[in-house]
Amino acid sequence: MLNIRLNNHKEFMHAHKDEYQRKMRAPYYALIEVLSPLMLQIDPQMEVRPAKCLSRIYRDTRFSRDKSPYRDHHWIAFRHAGEPRESAVMFWFELRIESMSWGLGFWGENRSAMDILRRRMVSHPHDLLELLPILGKHLVISGNSYKRLVPPEGIHPLLRLLYPMKDFYISRTGIDYNWAFSPTLYQKLVADYQTMAPFYRLLRGYYQISMLGGDSFEPL
Image (tube, rainbow, N blue to C red):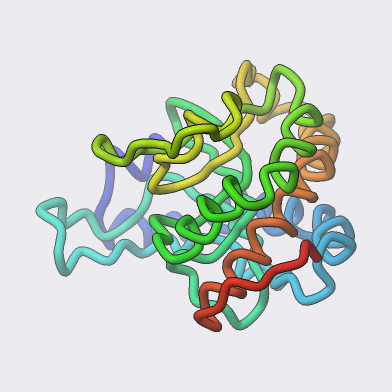
């Protein structure tokens, strides 16, 4: 990854293509394959083909000041097959030179699904409240919030901070970067993804309703 960052040009990648495939792409493909049974258990329609789950090494530079042609990192995104990446609900794993992260959430801002989530916080607060305790201390909900969106009176105190969110993520805290080189990494991912699975089903329900333009929802 560091070599790509310091030598981000076609000549370097052409000369080191085999090394890139062996040291970066192949380990990610292997990780996707060992996680695939769990992903299909969570959602039988989950996209698990490695080439579809792994980010491309080529950067889209059309609208960026940075014209470097290659990414110096990769990420994995598991989402329902056939759905557009933007605004979809996904499990992710990302390894950078500086950090490592994984979790669950919408890919970007999904206002229509979040609006349904807000309505359900008021009308059916237990949909979310019953799930919050399973996260424990290492999985936390985060996201950007609308500054002027005020929670309605009487909403449950645990939902007041979640109500104004414009995006929604559950991510792992306390990650040790050395885990990237440990054979137990995939076990940690499996444990956390299993814990987050009920949230995936809940958020996908909201996403489906938002695509249909309705309000009626029963958890999957």
